[in-house]
Image (tube, rainbow, N blue to C red):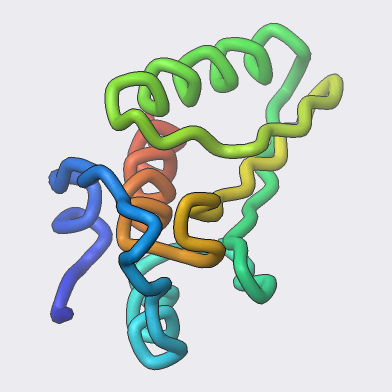
Length: 113
């Protein structure tokens, strides 16, 4: 897997089957290098985003919801007044899949707008 954030952000999520194995530690390590500021926590990747106010936070959350709907891959989102934490895992396989990294890259791209 020789990918960059831009490559990940242009990919589409693929449906995951329960029989599909989670990514290996080596694959996770390689994909984590392509993301900025995300933390790997066992079976999840997580990042906190900061904003000036509640309105900007909620606009970001709504944009993340739109991306999630389009990709059919949904994160856990924790929302505060001026911050938002996004956490991805692929529940169907009990670990991380490429979909988690694709969506993380798309959100990073969104945050740069």
